[in-house]
Image 1: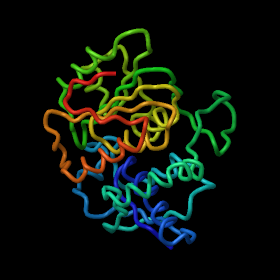
Image 2: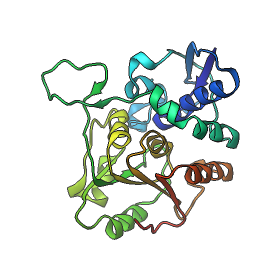
Image 3: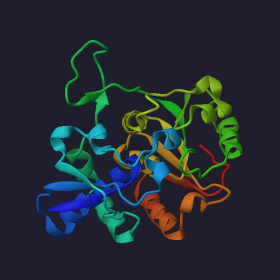
Image 4: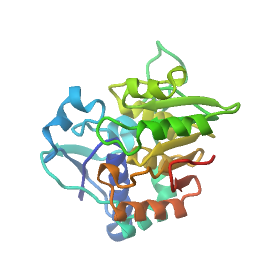
Length: 265
């Protein structure tokens, strides 16, 4: 059997997990192939100069999950997908959440330092624990304005915990908290994703993005807040999207959807 997946890193991961949970629920047959669909996007979404690190023609699954757990992954210029912004599919994902996490482990941070041959379970990225982390997304779809990020940082990123800011636009992040900017590889969002998907006892705050949702789904050891901005439908978000997000919040103890752009920790 094969399933279709498309989108950036967070969407690819959520659709991949949705495909397996759907298969386990209805078919329970081996998935032989995942087909990445890279067609019918605006031309600028394939242009690294314009798109930054949100390219849609990249196999992010292989950059996040252990290679020996993945099926064959191919690509096509198509529009197929496995929609997880569907209440029934979301319910199947929650039902199978523990099994999904066990079946598809993510890369751990490199433990031996530079100069060693990497085992297939490890990857070089920043290992952050017991910290406050803000994730910003601005280049391809901005769901929070600069003033909203600045307000959240001033109000909530205080106290003794270490503080970090990660995202897709270094110049934008430095307008919020220049001294706290931390990045992995600006050309590879999988490393920032792994930082928040693997870290322990962190509090991660962002606007609406499947990047954060997917990390929250895979990482039960940190707490994640997704904030509705002043314009909760910015970036093409619709009511069905929010309904499914509200469901994930109700079913995941480590996820909180904040109404309003001033949030509490």
